[in-house]
Image (cartoon, rainbow, N blue to C red; front, side, top):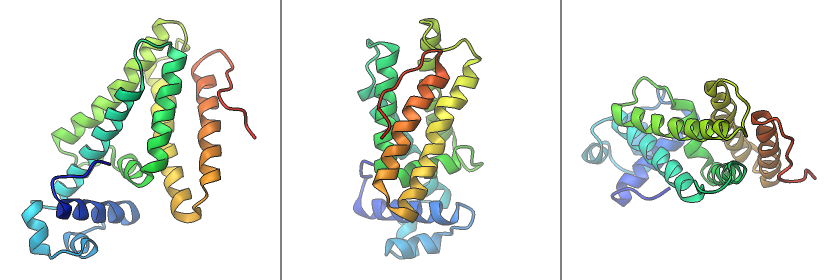
Length: 204
């Protein structure tokens, strides 16, 4: 993800990210974040008002980067099938390269400490996926199910894949398993969303 406003801010956020994903938000305190970042507690408070501030900064940064990448990679003028392929490939690349960041968002998508800016960032991503699905329905590519049902399939699968890839990365460090998971999910999701059977990548 793009760096924040200073090296110390970035160190604090990266330390908090590791602790939030490993221990959970509630079990992480400011002194442990400061220690993991290699700074004093007083120094940390010069950059952030409290733990909630670190949490929301991280949450917003990750979702902003995720949405920016989708908007760059997905071409609205292309066919729904091509847009799906672009959207999935962009998401998969981010999931593999930033598994900890996206696992953190997945774990905390509805955390009660999300501030209004974080909730707005979350809704922007959900709206992006929903609009894509509704457009596919209008073009009679996606099945005429309730859009929320399709959203559970598409966005829910991206969230779950974030957690799966983080686990595989942390426990097994198996890039081949990551690639297989992504290829299989791309095919299965398309087939679930449409009435057509399509194989984007042959399974090996």
